[in-house]
Length: 207
Image (cartoon, rainbow, N blue to C red; front, side, top):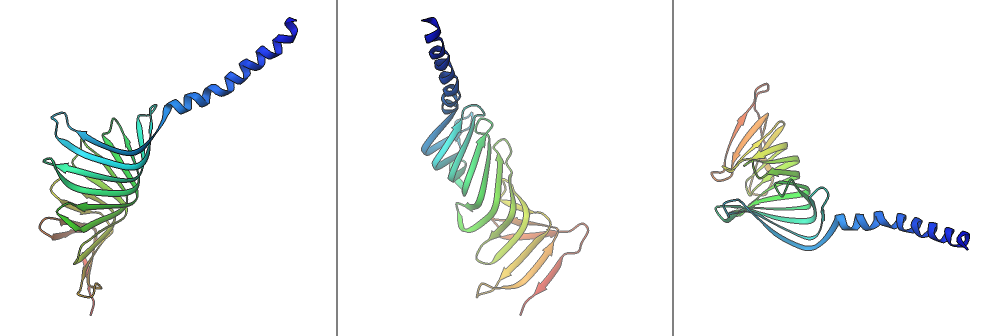
């Protein structure tokens, strides 16, 4: 009689052993629909808000993975920058934010001025924002492009080598072009300066 029940008992343990990792995995990854979250400083001021129609939270690594993200960065409790991207990752207790794919950054006061990039990284303990991959700043009159740029808290974007600066004409075609190692663009004053250590600043005029 004991010989008959022994295989049944062993089979039961085998089934339980196969199912247990699936149960643990589901408990680690939490799916979230329509995420709408605000992040505040220790003093109670709003730092940024983040929205995503579909996201997940990894409890083990304490990481948010978000789709179609919209982020508002606040300054003095008012929206300062609006950023959209295909995907984003939020880590380090909501302190490090990384956006990937079709990143679009707008100044809330100048929505016609847009910064495009493949990637955007921000550590909230740092006041600078890093943009990389096909970086392009564009408004009604100019285009600035490079592979890397840093936007600081004073609304100045530093573009790194190689930099191309184009002034548009009335029919939205370039008529003046400058190539430089570095460029600094002030969003508030619409002024730009150039800097080259090794190569001279080169310019072209189109007629």
